Length: 189
Image (cartoon, rainbow, N blue to C red):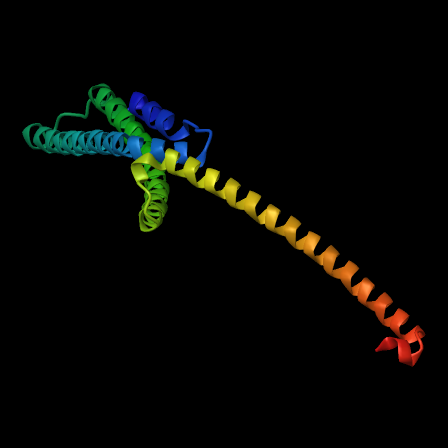
């Protein structure tokens, strides 16, 4: 069980350098993680069944011994070994239950991530991109974004140049009006 838990942690904790890489890793590793969780759950169920079976056998043995030899005193040393096994099994079961709770949390988190991932993949598909090639699609979008930013910058620069020309033309018009008003009336026509 420890090996399975370590394998799950290794799958979960592996990091990626970009969102696209993380999405791709998650897409590939989710089935492995789900398989490990299912195997872990089967081991837990087998352990719980062994515990239930052993407890039932001990109870049956106690009843049988009490029926066969009602006057014989109990033999504590004989039950000490069983008691130790039961304690060990109870301890293992308790650990397994705690690990199951932790794994349920991990599964819940991964399920939530999977839902978000699926929603993201639907959005990616809705804009015409291939989710399996998301990294190249992201690079294409980044390139297109860079080009559009450059075009916007050029348009802004052109707009500023036009505003400067407009301001200089308005100043020239103002000067022209002042000059015309300073001329005698007969020269204006």
